[in-house]
Length: 423
Image 1 (spheres, rainbow, N blue to C red):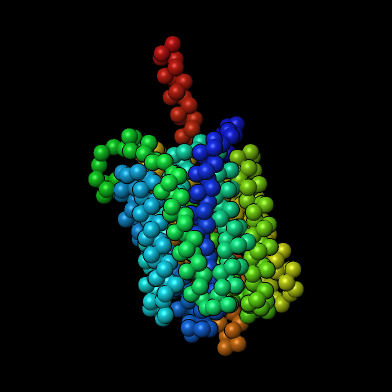
Image 2: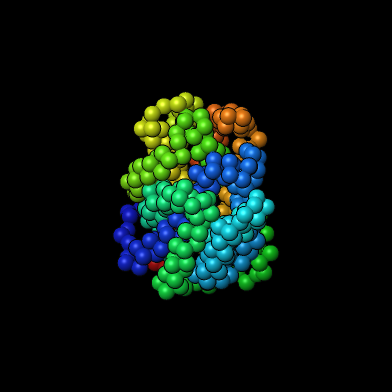
């Protein structure tokens, strides 16, 4: 396990940065996640089939992946605050386009534009976290930032579903636009320039920097692991709501209850997971989460019509398991890149994450078959595929943890040698 140093408390400014990044992540997550609960409504109101809906979901992921690769070359060249503002404004424009779309092609274009800008925001945010917080703090930081998932379930998705039921499916996207505009004001007025990485950067053009980062052998296993982690994490998401509605017989009006209670449970669990990963180690927490997630996925993907409370309990435990993997894995990954490569590494990592999510959605669309009555077939097959990927990820994370340990020991030995030479 990577060495755990005593956890430091956060300054007032750091707390503000955590809150701001969590809000940014909330809007981006909500924009992506709202497609799943709207899935049944979209498929029926616009006559989407499973392949078309999977295409609409994956369009965001693929465009986000492309933009992440394009941004990687210059991610370490400029002030991270400016990059955050530019891409957040683009994200708002893309979401507005989705909210105004009236056909499948227009919605597809809107998702592509949103992905081009929104896909880079996570990478920029993670680079800021790495710049402003020590490794011993990052588990807790990720626990709070990832609470955006929980808040989106407690407030964002239920309100979005309420508006969609009250008006139409366009309303949730327009709600996100309004909230994001307010967030933009806070980014501009509160966040200080983040430029420390520029001093460490070797003067080279963007293509050389991108090539150097991709070609770094110590980064290649983390990149592969991110892709595997994302494929497993996204594979169930696009068809979870159609499965719950058509197979488990939960009504559209009951969905907000599920998301609210799951969100409340997550708001309690995620900070605890972050603290646990800082206290006992990122790798042990990841393994614990993997075991829980695998067990609950088997139960979830084989559900038959059951009472609402059972669906809530099973869904909440499964989500807790999944996030117990995401939080320590993300925190561990921040220790991989050197300071001059952080932005590029995070951009490429985010790009692979998004592309892998798109691949997962496409695979899910190929595997799932929807019967005329709406019932989904082979959802359990997706679950078993996810578990297989979890096993592969566990092995990769073990190797990455060892890689980080060796780097930490090498740096410690170098520092001790310098001290001896001075003495």
